[in-house]
Image (cartoon, rainbow, N blue to C red):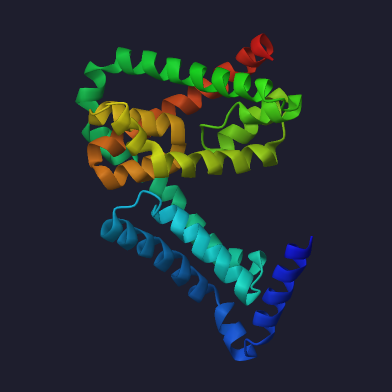
Amino acid sequence: MTDTLLQSSVLAIIQSNIPDTLKNYFSNEFFLIALTFGSYFLGKLLRRRTGWVVMNPILVAIVVVIAFLELTGVSYETYNEGGHMIEFWLRPAVVALGVPLYMQLEKIKKDFVPILISELAGCVVGVVSVVYIAKKMGASHEVILSLASKSVTTPIAMEVTKAVGGIPSLTAAVVVSVGLLCAVCGYKTMGFARVRTPKAQGLSMGTAAHALGTATSMDVSNVHGAYASLGLTLNGIFTALLTPSIIPLIC
C-alpha cells in the first residue's frame, strides 16, 4: 500500500513539472504514432546489437509506451485516438500474410496430411494441458474456461470463451501474455529441443503464439513466416471447433 502511494506521488510530481505546451505536444496523435513505431524499431535495433531474446521489439514497444503514458499522464484514450490509424493497417497486414503462404503452396500441398495431423494434436494438447495444469493449481472454474483458448488470436479466443462460459477480458489478457512469452522464448526453446527445420519451427510458433509468433517468424525468414501463418490459421479453426467439445470432457 505504501509503495503504491509513493509511486503515485512520484508520478504526480513528474507530471506536474511538465509544461503545458509539452503536454499538448505529447498528446498529439502523430507524435504518439511516431513513438509507437520508434519504440518498435528501437527494440529491433537492441535485439540485433545485443542478441538478447528479451529485447523482443513488441515487448520493448509495449514497455516504452506504457512508461511514457505513465510518466507524462497522457491517457490511454488519447493514445488510442492515434492507435486507430495503426489498427487500420493491421487488416491489410493480416491479408499480406497470405503472400509467403502462397509462395510455399506447393510444398504445403505435399505435406498437408502431416501438417493437419500435427495441428490437430497441437490444438488438443494445448487445450488439455492448460486446463489440467490450471485445475491442479486450484484455479476457479471460470478462470480455467478462460485459459482454454490461450493460443489463438484474440477475436477467436474471446468468442470461444463466451461459448464455453469463461471471462472474455481475462482471455484477451492471457492471449497477449502467451504471445509475448512465445515470441521471446519460442525459438530458443525449440533450439534446446533440437527442433531445427523451418517448417516445424514456423508451425510451432503460429500454433502456440498466434499473430505475435507469426510476426516473429516473419523476421526469421519467409518460409518460417509462411508456415507460422498456416499454423495460426489451422489452430484457430481447430480451437473454435473442438474446444467447446473438449472442455466438458476434462472440466
